[in-house]
Amino acid sequence: MIRQAKLSDTKDILRLIRHWADKGKMLHRSLNDIYERIRDFYIYEDGSGRVIGAAALTVVWEDIAEIRSLVVEESEQKKGIGGQLVERCVATAREIGVKELFALTYVPGFFTRLGFKEIDKQTLPHKIWSDCVRCHKFPDCDESAVSISLAPAGEG
Image (cartoon, rainbow, N blue to C red; front, side, top):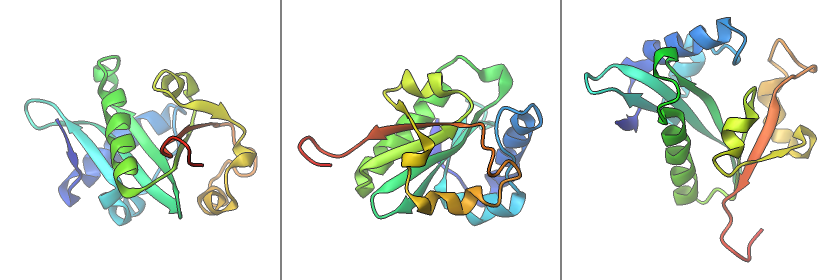
């Protein structure tokens, strides 16, 4: 089941992110950052209520948003959970009027299977770089950028 994250989910989200970030598969996020952005997160619970996946939808500017911190517990991989979390982010982005949705990722193939296209990071607006300049990998980012247009036909 996917639902909006609650404050009580914060440490589970951190646990999932830390697991993959320690393996070099995603970037670390601080507990403080997760608390500050808890309303951006969706979580995936298994039947027992255990948090096994998470993703954040962060509005960046007027009509662009980012999927961040997409993570699924290692033992639950390859079950469609990540795809469901992305689909929820896409649906919400459409509902609020986002025209372009992007992600920075080490696994671009996952996103391209969901309809995203690989793009040059340099084509993204400068506004997105506000988080990047605080990253320990800046300016030598090794993530790939993917994007999907959500603009209605004939727009954008």
